[in-house]
Image (cartoon, rainbow, N blue to C red; front, side, top):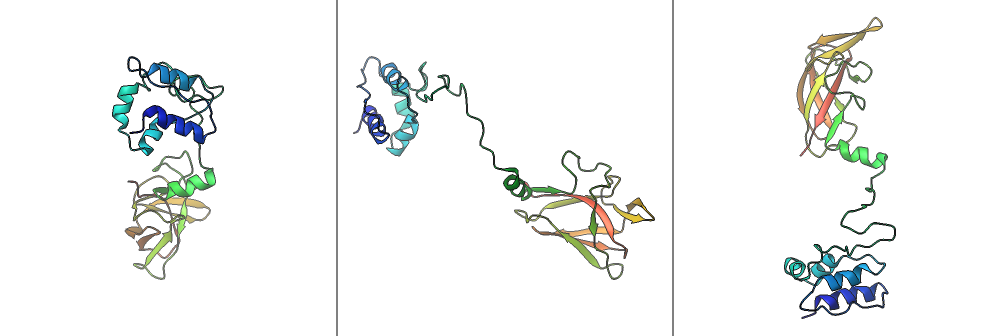
Length: 208
């Protein structure tokens, strides 16, 4: 069976490192290997090497004591030795990619930083008017969600299951003209008892 030292050295050879790790002494199997690995200026993952070779990592870690030793095998120039002593900054997706991804799980008409149910007429969205009372109306969600969401809608004063009207240059709230019917991953359907264009704020949640 290939020894741990042979596996490490094979990995070093693939990275162009020509100074091999020496053998492990039975009396001190871990510290000598770790010290040799830590003294070189490269970055490797012994744990991943063991897995790729189908080694029992738990047994090898116990035998070599690689992760309990004072030195850390993950040596990077300018980074202090020690597990996660100076972790790199997280890699974040650009906001234009992150927002559509998040909206598959949760969407709202409220602006960022405005809690659902707040008094807010600036973000109200229109629900198209109907031909006659009792007809269906609805809206398309900006991003198709991962599944049919749970929907809550509010009027401009923040009252749930109510809607708003805009008339005579001002907003009027607390109307019960809209009844939620159903939602799919891409649409919300209402029944309207009023032929005017109605306005709501909403939340749509398809979180796991």
